[in-house]
Image 1 (cartoon, rainbow, N blue to C red):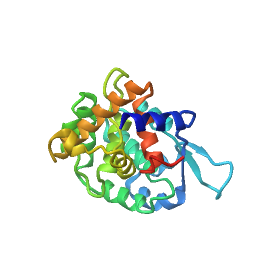
Image 2 (cartoon, helix red, strand yellow):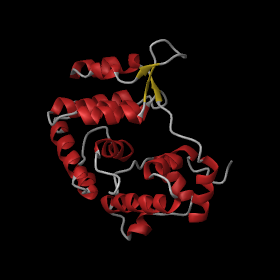
Image 3 (tube, rainbow, N blue to C red):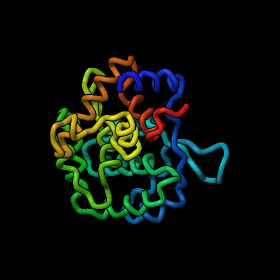
Image 4 (cartoon, rainbow, N blue to C red):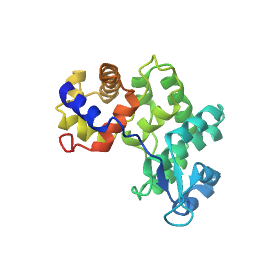
Length: 223
């Protein structure tokens, strides 16, 4: 597996994750009832493409995270930005699922408690605690990655979505076999720890390696 990963890193070493395009018009009606439409101003306008489209990148999420306080509205805004970034223009269900989550009365408690757990390094606990209508693992692990502000010496939270999983499976890695259990919080923690270990061995950042696995989407042997 490490040989395959090394080849992937060598092949894509000059590539980097680009900002994601989104269309504020598809989100506005879902966010306005929850007083979160101002989040649509995040990022920058597109120089080409449909009028009104914007670009949001990981750096924008970091900026929002650093400005966010402990109040529910700040955490809600960051969560909405994460959902927008994770959906782009390809996930048409993103606005609807975000509205469902915003309507869940558990949101303030869940966002606060999971952010605290992530910052304490308790990724398994954060996984267990994240229960919001409309939000599954591909998106709540994006939330974990967005709120994790620990320094680079820690095994910071990473995203585990279907595309990353597809690449891991293509490389012959199984989360439940590596963890020795089918317990999802343990499997997620095992994934994060493994990714950081591999990234260190390969001389790359763990979040870049995560993006690479997302990018190839299971096609690990194709140029």
